[in-house]
Structures are given as structure tokens and as C-alpha cells.
Length: 267
Length: 256
Picture 1 (spheres, chains in turn green, yellow):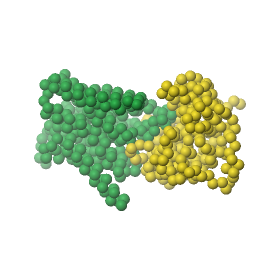
Picture 2: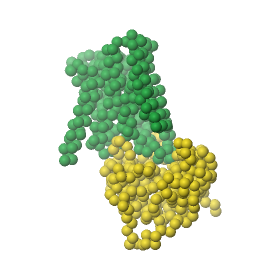
Picture 3: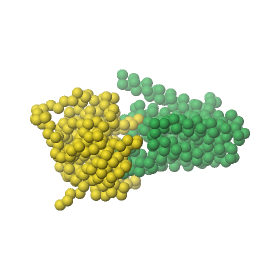
Picture 4: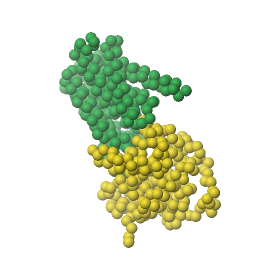
């Protein structure tokens, strides 16, 4: 296959595979708590991190991890306090993140095409160093989710009950928030910040149409996510479109097929 | 012999969102007791039980759980809690078995696998609420009353010494109420304690030895339960509630 002849494509495919695996593992817990849009919010905040990295001439992935983790913790604290104005506070944070990023990148002398790479993903942008960071962080996210699976399921089912049975609820909530932030940043290179949340949510939404169990949904979504992610990247190469767009379009198509065929089976 | 007190709340005051919900409430529940918390809507019943299980902070007063000040209490798996819920929640499907097994999590340390004893406790809890045959089904396919039974089984799976239930009979069909009464009877016979919030007692009436009646955030009375209408506990009496059948998740739970 000619597609594997290029180093950047090999790196891109590996990155797409691990990100496609990791993103739905976090996404399952976000969907379970009806927090599907959290990933979008973190993506906006991470953009400021990217801008900071470009401005400081360090790795944008690294600064994005730091800024989005801080953002995710703030989001989680606002959520926990759940004040009436909670959702407005979150909205303000998101806008601030996007605006901050656009200004910082411009200040650093960045171009709008570089900007597009971060927002919608870019095939050629994954360097060897990036790949190492992406694989390591994805592995950390997957291992953490596996390690705390039981507790996370209990907390996401019912926070009050989990608290009464003595579980460290706040720690577990922060774990999901930080995991989401890390996933957003590692997925930034392939799907881009504006579409990263789709990779967390759409595979879960698709699998839960046909699954009965939580574990089935979780594992199925990870499998589907990695297939869609790699498949989308291949489409991106041949059709010359941004990978974020093709990955998400492919995922949405799978959702549509699942939804329609479920109707058929039931009818 | 002095019985161990499960909950000992003295002069408890609770304020939520700047509003005082409980005012100088003192309630003690001893081991093995079966207590109903009664009272009108807004009288503070739910706040009282949430305070007992440590979910609401006290603005004033003292709470001891199993004779230990609540701040130092660490043996939370000894408690089982069934909150008032419209349905078994969440955006992702889960099977009856998965939800009930999650009631075991508080008892497990991180690296311990789910053992045969854990599975036995889950099976037993499911049997107790009469849902063994639905173990592999998605909870959302169950009726409202059956979902309530799943929530109770989840608490029972943790093999608690005390079970605290918030309105377990609200919006639940007569069959499920009877099953629930059976399960609570088993727990009580085995020496467990039960504290439950209820609007009407229904088939639970015969189990309840003591009723704490709340009114406007204070304890109005505490003693033997009010006698139900004589025909209520007649064996042929069919207990019917206009809202009970068939329950759908959209029709109740507005007052949670």
C-alpha cells in the first residue's frame, strides 16, 4: 500500500489508532453523566494552551496538556458547585479559551493555516516526538480508566450512593475531568480541537444504540472509535481533506447506519 | 445491655442554600430497629435521612454513626442507601446485574477481583427483590417499580447492617411494594436496621415498630406508628394507588 510508504502517514495512523481507542473510553463516562459537551469545552480551553506553546516556542502539545488540565479542573469545580449560573460560567471559560488562543497564535506570528491544523487536525503534523507523547498519554488514560473502572461506573451511576458507600467521589470526578483534558490534547493532532469531542461521544452514541450493558458499550465504543479514526485518516489521505472532518463524518455515518438498522430490526 | 446506636443525631440543624431545613432535630436509631420517617412534603424527611448518611453537613449539632463521630467514621460499607430516583439513571445502557454489582464496589479494594462471595451477594440481592431472571436485561427496559427494586438490590448487594431508603414505595406498583416489604423483612429478621422515608406505609406497615413524624423541619412526634385504617391490614384488602400503575419514568419524581 502506497499509503504506508510515507513516514508521516505511518505516524499518523498509529496516532489515530491509539487516540481512537482512548477517546471513547473517557467519552463513555461523559455520556453516562450527560456531560457530552465537556470535551468541546476543554477543546476550546486547550486552544489557549496551543497558543501559549507557539508563543513560548515550546511544544504546543505540552502547554496544551497543562492548560487544558487546569481548565478541566476548573470546569469540574464549577460543575460540583452547580450554581444556577454554572453553565454561563462554563460558556465564558470556553469563549475565553478560544479567544486567548487566537490572539496568542497571532502574536507569535502564526499563520491561519497553522491554526487550521490545530482546529481540524492535520496529517503531516505528527512528529516522532509528538507520536511518543501521544502513545504514552493515551496508554496512561486507558490504564487509569481500566484501573478505576469499577469505581468510575459506581460514581457515574449515582454520586450520592457512591459517596455514602465511602468512595472518594471528588477524586474520581477529577480523574475523569483530567483524563478528558489529556485525551483532548493527544487527539488534537489528528482530529483537531473542534472535533475531538466527536471522537469521544459519537462512537459511544452509536454503540449504545445496540448494546445492553455498560461494559459492552465501553469496549464496543473503543473498538469502533479506533476503526473510525484509522479509516477516517485513510479517507483523508486519498480525498485530501482535513482528517478531523473525515474521521467525524465517517463516525456520523456509522451512527446513522446503526440507528436506521435498529429501526429496521425492531419494526 | 445497651444496644449500639446506628445513628445518633443530637440537636441537628441543617441549612441548604441559606435556608434552614432542619431545626434542632434529635433522633437516635438503635441497632435492629425498623423506623419510618413520616411527614408532609417539605417537612424535612429527605433532608433528615440525607443528613444521617452524611450527605448534608450539619450547621449545628452532633451526629454519630455506629457510635463514632461522623467526621471520623470510615466504615461506610456498613450502610446501604437508596435515594429517591425517578429511574436508574445515566446516558449509557447498563444491565440489571451491572447496576446491582456496583453496590459491592465500596466493599472492594482496588486490586481485588470480584470474588465468588461478591457474586453470591449480588445473586442473593437480586433474588430478594425477585429480579434474578432479569439480570442480563438493560435496566431501562424495566418498569418503574422494577427499577426501584434494582436500586434496593444495589444497596442490599453491599450487605449493609443498616439500610436507609428515601420513599422506596413512591410510584411503585403493588407487586413491587410487596416484594420490597419481603426484602426489608428479611434484612430486619437477620438483625439489620432499617430507616425509611414514606408517604404511606402500604404493605410495610406491619414491619414498622417506630415512626418519627416530621413537621416544618422539626420532630413532631416519635413513637409507635400511627394505626392504619382497620381494613388496611385485612388480608383481602387490595392496596391501590391512582399513580401506581403503570409507572412511567416521566410521571413521577418531580419532588426529588
